[in-house]
Amino acid sequence: MNTKKTNYSFIGIAFIILVFGIIFVPKIVDRIQGNDVIRTESRSKNVSVDSEGFVSDLMFLNINGNPKKVPSFSFKNQNGETITNQDYEGKVYVVEFFFTTCPTICPRMNKNLVQIQNTFTDFEDFGVASFTINPDYDTQDVLKAYAENYGITNPNWHLMTGDKETIYELANVGFNIYAGENPNVEGGFEHSGNFALIDKNGFIRSRKDDFGNPKIFYKGIISEVEKEDEDGETEEISMLKEDIAKLLKED
Image (cartoon, rainbow, N blue to C red; front, side):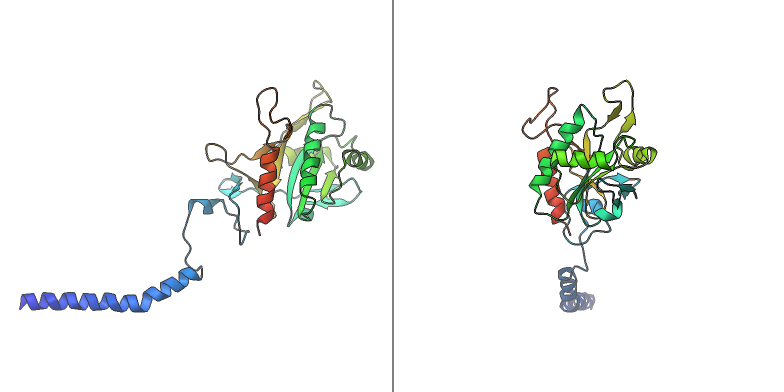
């Protein structure tokens, strides 16, 4: 009697499994095909909650667990127009802080940016945001002449001027790109020669370093032709171009 009961139990369990497979497995497959069931992968931590569709492998700069977004700003550009962060929505753009009388790194930075501009002439959703750190001198007319002298033609490349303290806060806090006055250095101002890369949703993006962390910024002084400087630092303009192209493909 015990043997028969055991056999009946096995038969019952097998029948339940068979019914479950017939009824529920096709539904689970349908959910997976319909993207209702999504596998959690490590890269998903780098995906913006505001992004949909294709997202590249470029990382987000996370602050306290949240991707850092460009803060709000409003300045006058070289054409006397008021430009805000909203004018860059839906565009991939590069950010720099500079000044027109800079005798050292700014000319090199902007020559590199012009070269990048000319690489992406066919993309209406690419731009550059240049903020002067010497707004007392860099008026609208000065910036306009500077743009013409360097061959700046992209309508989304705005050279902006405004309140000095607001610009410095935007640089040092908003983008973590150092800028300040220093009467002891050539030109009277010192600043980083780095570029920040911003995606279409306004987030700061970059590729990983050798340790798997975001590089955050791109060196803007060394050109592709130079390849490296006297200290052995390698150029990152080619890297920046590659990453701009990736972000332009994002939805």
